Image (tube, rainbow, N blue to C red; front, side):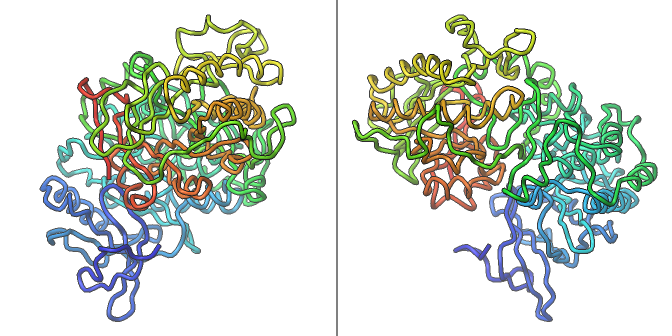
Length: 600
C-alpha cells in the first residue's frame, strides 16, 4: 500500500517508499538505503513512544532479533530504540504472509505444506538456540518467501534468562495460537510454548481453520486451556503430529529434533483430506477464498461469522468464562484475537426463498444509515449517545435513541436463551436422536430453517419483532446470527440462511426498514439478491476483512472492534471511509462496570 498523508519521508537515513502494513503497536514501511538496499522499517506509534514500559519492550525485541540468525528469520540491519519515535530495520523479505496465502489461495497441500512445516521447525531451532522464546508464532508472522518461510515480529518475545517485564495491559499473544501456559502463567513460558503455537499454525495452514476458535478472545482462551483441539480435515500423519504439539502439558510436547524427524514423513504430493470433509484447497482455488468449516455444534467458528455480542451477553457468558477469568486476572493483560474461518462461494437463494433479483418491496421508502459517521453499538444496554453520534444500534427490547438513525437488533436465527419455550417444538433444530441442537457458546437453541414451510412459520414470529421495531421508530433492522449455518454445517447450508433472510428483508422493506448484514463475509456476494442494504461488522480490523465488506456495501459499513489492536488496524486503513467504534466485550451500558467506548 502507498504512503499515507502524515507518514515520514525517511527514518534513520532510510527513505520510506511504501507501507507494508500496520498493527496495534506500529507501522512497517518498505525503506531503501542510499545504496539501494531494501529494508522493512518498523516504526512505533507515537502514542507509545512516551511509554517507558513499552520502550523497554521494544528494546527487548531489538535485542531478541539481533540474537537470532538463521535462514528462516529476517535479521536486524539497523535500529534505534531510543529515538524520539523508536524504529527497527530488518532485511526486507518479499512475499505474502501465510494468513494472506491461505485466505486467498486456500490451504497448503503436499510439498508446500511439508516445506512450511520443516522451515518453521528450523526457524524455531535458531530462535531457541539463541535463548529466545518467540511467544507469538501465528500466520501473520510468517512470510512465505520463494526459498522458504521466514518468521518475523519478535514484539513479545523475550530471552529466557531475562527478567519478565510487567507489561500491564499489553498484548501478550494471539489467543488462537497461544499455549495454555501463556494464559495461566505468561511469565513462565518455555520453548515448548512455541511448539504448541506451531501445532495450531500447521492445522491452520493445512485446513484454513484454527483448532481453537471461540467467538471471543476469552472463549478461545478457554478452549485452549480446557478443550480438545478441532482437527477436522487434518490428514495423517500431520494429524497425529499436531495432536502431540497441542498437548496441554508442555512436557508432553515433542522436542524440535523429534518434531523435525516426524515432519519429514509428510508427503510431497497432495493427499486426500479426512473422510467426509470437502477439499477446501481445491474449492478455494476455484472460488477464492473458500475454506473449511469446523463441524459440530460445539465449534464456535466462522470467519466474519460468530456474533460475539448480543443482548444479555454478560449474563450468558459468565459461567463459560469462569475458569478463564482467574487466569486472566493473574496476568492482568489484554489479549487480541486474530480470526479466520469458513467461506463458501456464494449461490443465489433457493427458489423457496424468492427470485434472485434484489429482495426489496417498493411499498415503502427505505433509507440506509449515513456513511462514515460517528456511531455506537448499544445492544448490551441503552444509554444516551455521546455528542456527535449519528447512528446507534440497540436491542429491539429498547426504545430507539432519539434524534439519531437507530438500528434494531434482533436474534433471528436462534432462540434467545430462556425463550426456547416460546417456539413451537418442531421449529427447533434437532439431531438424529431428536435432541435440540444448541449453540453452546450462547446456550441458545438453533432454529430449523431447512424447509420453506418452517422458514415461513419462523419468519412470521420474527416479523412481529420487525413490526415492533418499525412501530417504535427504528430506521433499520439488524438480524443477528445470519452466520449460524457456518457453525452447524451438518444441518444447515448457506442457501437455507439466504432464503430465510430474504423473507425477513422483504418484510422489513415493506415496513420501511433498511436491513443490515451482520458479519458473515461468506455471503457478501449475495447481499443484493437477499435484500441487504448495509453491514454491521464485528472486528473486521482484527480479522483484516474491512476491505471486502467496504467493497460489497459501497462503504456503508458500521464497524465495532473489541480490542486496541483491532481499533488501531481499522483506524489506520479505514478511518476516512467507514463508521468505527470500539466497545467493551460485554457491550455494557455507560455507567456500569466494564463500560468502554472509543473511536478513531
